[in-house]
Amino acid sequence: MSEQPEHPGQQQPATVQQLSRQPQQMAISASTQELAELIDLHLGQLRPKEPAWRVSDSPISGRGIFATRDIAKGEELFREHTILVGPTAHRSSKLRTCTLCYRLVPGQTDAEALCPAGCGLPVCEECGKSPRHKSECELFLKWRPKQTQRIDPRSLRILSVVRCFFLDEQQRRLLYAMQANADRYYMKEVERAAACFEDFPREQQMLDFFYRTICAFNTNAFESRSCVEGHEVLIRALFPLAGLLNHQCTPNATHHFEDGETIIVCATERIPCGAEITVSYAKMLWSTLARKIFLGMTKGFMCQCPRCQDPTENGTYLSALFCREQGCRGLVIPVQTRTLQPDWRCLTCENVFPHAKMARYQDFALNTINNRINSCSVPDMIHFINDLCPRFCPPSNYVLIEAKLNVIWRMTRFDTDQYTPEEVAHKDRYREDILAIIHKLGAGECTLKKLITEEIQ
Image 1 (cartoon, rainbow, N blue to C red):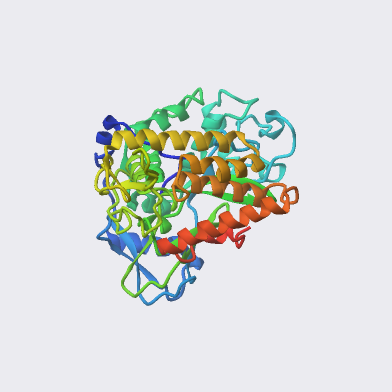
Image 2 (image 1 turned 90 degrees about the vertical axis):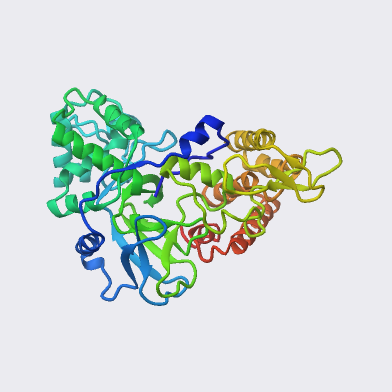
């Protein structure tokens, strides 16, 4: 699992070399069978009496989850509570959110939202009296937070990992049984956390446990939006079972958060007995190159699934750009997909273009559309998509699809009654365009489909 940036963009050769390296895996303290037993204990009452799945070794990567019988499209496979969770504390998110119930804390200032004891955590009045906050408050007070009048995003972001100190013995065994990829970047998270406090712990055993947790968390955690009392919050959560789901770019399962701390995994299509159950770690509508760069940056592997090996991506042409040859407006797609720097070929005039040239063109489209997304009103975005984008970007290109998704999201979630009938008609047309792509990809009843058809509110 992984967190997803706005766009991975195009990378330079030095970064390509960096992405090709494999992350160092920390030692796992349990066999696959022992892990399965720990997960059964972790699920508790949420474990189905006769699960339609089993944990087993995977040919894709390490361990995975496999169907023990034929699974119907749309069937719920499991639901699971997190063992570690916390706010992402992104710059775009509202930091005055209770760290326990994720409701927006009343008030206009940071100081009004912060715990009155001085631990530096925003918490609502009700949760501030809970035993769970008391334990976290006492720990943060012991470490002496440097910032007590303003919400520090660094301490908020690290809270999900700090909560490892409150796991019981069984949960710690489960944490150490999970895959954990070591990375120098993760050590910086420890350094950023330490910078928030006067007396952050320096005992080696505690630091080792903290670092191991960060590695396991970043290797397996999910990030998702969760709506609490009309307030949308971004949450990072670690689910030991769901974290075993391996990646495919057109997966057979999908997930969504039921609340801030519960995940539900469902089949997007019929899964035959014995097949591995998979999800996508990247955005489904990204191009192949975008997905590969993102997976290389965050997971250290290059996907070679069937979709990744098809330059047309099941006829969706999400990677396609316009031909740069004078007089030709044909679609240009990568010649092959096993490298991050492929040559590109026009499907009309058959001219071949070097990757560097097409990467500059893709960056131009990416930056132009992203700038509009970040600055334009919905009516201006619709005009931009309909009248200006066709001059430089094919309608199938993934960046333009992202722009259409942005319009759908904004019109569905915010001020839904302020748009004209014509603008609503454009939104509906964009929705049909995206549903057609999802159908071509064979993505079935995925979460994205449910979101844009307003089945998940």
